[in-house]
Amino acid sequence: HANEVIDIDHLNKIPAKEIYKDFTSSFPPPKVIYKYENMPWNDIWDRLNRPVLNSHVRDVMFLLIHNILPTRERLFRLNQCRDDQCDQGDGLENIEHLFTSCVRTQVAWAWCRRKIMHLMPDSPTYPSNFELINLAYESPMDDEICWLVSQYCFYVYEQKKMRAHNYTIDVDKLRKHLMELYVQNQGSQNVLAYIPF
Image (cartoon, rainbow, N blue to C red):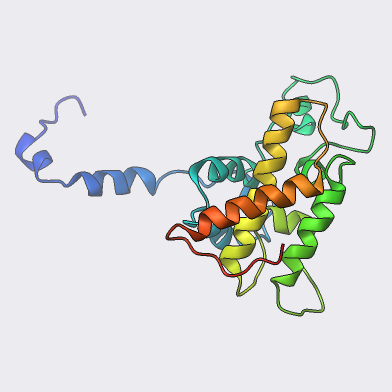
């Protein structure tokens, strides 16, 4: 109310941590959780913040997981693109298509998925492509799978950004790139177990 007097001494005694806690606890949850309600969101957000991911990779994965990467499907929905189809003529360009089934990425993803499956325990059912690229899986090799999937997605996204419509993910170049990153990672504090390249 306009007539209330603010006690400055009282305000100075409230820690900033308490003020921020009140602000951040009132944020609405991201919209994506309503679209995919059966996803293990706490695990996904935990993986997104793993130390094995650098900030650039984490940024791309944040956009991917929240379904806000500029795919043709999203751009079309925002009236920034004439249609939502992949320019390769092989379907709707959504997140899953872009990283796993587009003719530009399907061979590289098949290679990467085989590497991921080697890191998973034997199971009658394995995560779908959608679940994997969204970091929604269960495995004792959690950091390794998180790192491999995230580095793959980052690599694909960077190739798409750099080359626009003239890119195809070459498995040999991807493998070499991931091996170099793996060796660099082993020199840091975030040591990964063996990844079968």
